[in-house]
Amino acid sequence: MTDKQPVAARPAPPESLQALAAIDALGEGIAAARVLGLDVARAAAVAQEASERLGIAPDAYVVALVGGTGVGKSTILNGLAGEDVSPAGARRPTTGEPVAWVAEGAVEEVRPLLARLGVERSRTHAKAELRRVVILDLPDVDSLEAGHRAIVEELLPKIDVVAWVTDPEKYADAVLHDAFLRDWMARLDRQIVVLNKADRLDAGSLANVKRDLQGLVARTMPATGWRERVGGLARDREVGRVPRTPPAVITTSAIGGEAGIAELKAWLADAAEAKAVVAARLTAAARAALLDLTTGAGVTATGAGPLVSAVEQRRAIDAAVEEVLRVVDLPGAERQAVAATRARARRRGTGPIGLLTSAIYRFSGRQARAANPTAFLRGWRERGGLTRAAEVVRRAVVDALPGVPPALRGRYAAAAEGRDLERRFEDALDRVVARQAEFAAPSSRLWPVIGLLQTANTLLLIFAVAWIVLWVIARPEVASYNLPGLGPVPAPMLLLFAGLAIGYVLARLLSLHAGWLGRRWARRVSKELRDAIKGIIAADAFAPIDRIEAARSSLAAAWRRATDQP
Image (cartoon, rainbow, N blue to C red; front, top):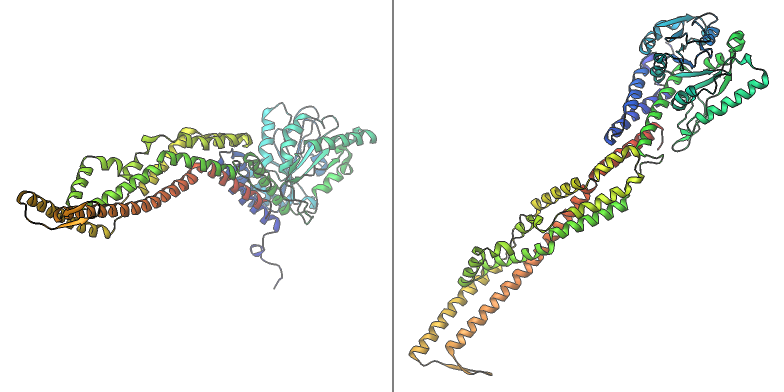
């Protein structure tokens, strides 16, 4: 038995898990950035490269010697090897393609890695302390050959560690600082700046040049970013983006033999394991790519605050709802609802005369005009448009544009396009009306009872009128009743007056009851309409903005996951 675990059963080191988490978070951030319309080409390339690198030669890391013409990159490599690995020259670019320096025992292991990098030339060495290190001598960054710089730019995203090489003559070169250091220092976890040809200066001049170079590097380094050291060292961070430490500056003298490059050799053979170095580089690259996306989206270290404040959105929504309700005219709809209820009551709660007047009311078209809340609501366009409702929302978005990151302004401006907002409001209102406007006026069991009484009263009136006619023509003897203020009133006339009074009372009772039911129903329908309009406007007014904000929130969440923030 052995205490050693099989390779497949060993848990992944924390650095690898951290890299996987950062790569996954980058993928989520890219998806959110696509919704925002941000350029994700660079971030997508980082994600793809990181995913591929994790599965290729994880026990070795690649160091690139990057610098200008004649600074001594090839000479440094030859000094490390103790032999001529790469041809050296002082006046012209002699390294036209990458040259790899690989330990003899690691050739087969790193072959897929070199193939992925497109490095065809390689030399081997037997230095045990550098067995896990693959050193690349790259073409010059300031070469007159445009293809040389293109090779460096293509390879840098795939390099784990970089040694930036310069000399006392070129240490302030703008190409190195502006085109490479400024962009790439934030994307690498492990790097160093090498001031070569130190033997050409006396001690005082060398100290001055080194100090000057350190200042240039510090000024070139991005002010903020995310830095996290690996290999058991304590992490120095705060919530969000933390100040980054510029890479160290060391001096070498490639022509001074091993003593001249001892500091660089010790840095290359650092005790940090290759897996930790690779994982740290991939983590840093993923975080840097995410940082670019979050910066473009205006996402801060603490999250993604809404670019249109919640207060301003609520104010605009309330104003838009009032404008929509003004066009809908809910008071008019309520009057129509009450009239429709009374019309239904007349059909069910009146006698023959009421049925006749109800039919006249209906067939004359008056009922369709004054007692049809469904048609009234569906005809809202006849009472005005929704331009003013769209304008209050558009103004809220436009007022927020100065604070919107430049990369998102196009999306925000499109969300504020007035005609599109008005069309969406029109569609939303039509949906509300279609759902709510199929009105069925209320009814009551009292109405048929009143209708029977009205019919009986009509018969009573007919009898009274007939009796009066008979009394006038034939003059039969009829009883009379003394009424205060009127004196004696014949019975037929008294019966007629009673019938008319009863009919009036029944009609008023029907009208009052129908009006009460109608108003109650109208208020309920009006509230449902108001709530439905308010809800759909609230959901639709800032819908494009909400999608943008949701994507920004997802991007902020991805950033927190990538940087292990709660």
